[in-house]
Length: 430
View (cartoon, rainbow, N blue to C red):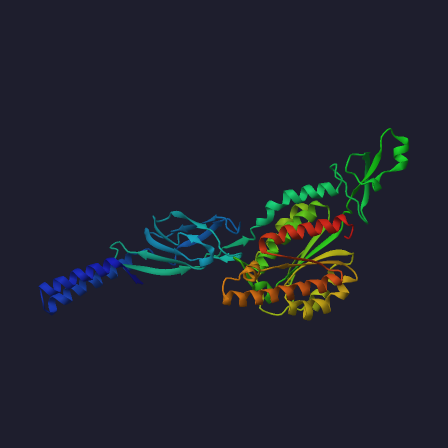
């Protein structure tokens, strides 16, 4: 049972009456009127337990977008329902509105709409629906809850999609579909065409030129049907926030751009998220199903506050990929992470695969390193320079072992990883 503000107002009026007519009879009379009104409302209010609630609507939305979920309230009883309904969602779901005033005649139903604009990636599940059925006098109400389960998955926003057209244009250049010709170790012969200014003279086909009236060159295309495995480190280093988002979210955005580009290039793309166990994996999806599969697998991932088991990660990668592949590992590049984790675990991986390590750099470090405004700023700059030097040393250690390293701030990481992939493809290292 719940009491309304109207009852409080009526009680205030009763207090005035008791003040004008002091004595026990007036007090008891006012109390009796109030109690009678409450009893009448509770008895005549539509029962809450008999209501039937169900949901329908959207189940997925890109982070920052808005979707709508509908709640249908059916009143199978013989009394009309006058109610206030609280539809509870987590604060990060961005539900508007959360309370509804509704009247449902007996035997009818009404439909309520809630707009959801999630502010965090992952699954946002509806909580219980609380119904306050108000009596005809508006003094008291029956109150109860119903379970109306529903879940909306907030998917990664894929903000780096804007870089895809320019990288696809470069990919077409590698494929020999434009006048720009690329030749590298391991690339495949594509076709012959007439020489144009700017072509590499090493690609002239002298036999074909002898039979033709013009100089003829060979065009090359990168090898296709290669395997690309994207590995997301979901350990403690991925939980650190750089700018407005955790490192893991930035890595996901770069992974989506790389996956879309590699799929267009004809390569087979897989995904694995790992810290001390496999948290998510995608493999065997066709080109049209790859991006939906990636975003669905990434959406519920959250960083685990544990140290990543690099040896276990390497073992999981080796058991998953039998052919030579490009393994793109999104992880931290802190000195401890590299020296204690990556360096001991990478040799067995490097013997069978090409490895690219991508890390999110903090632009705030560069800002601190450049600040010399006062004594405190100088000390901060010295600490920032030391951190940058340690990071460069860690990257150099990986590079000497044959690892391609990409270390960029959040807004540059995705295109930099895509460029590194295209460079490896052009060089025939995939």
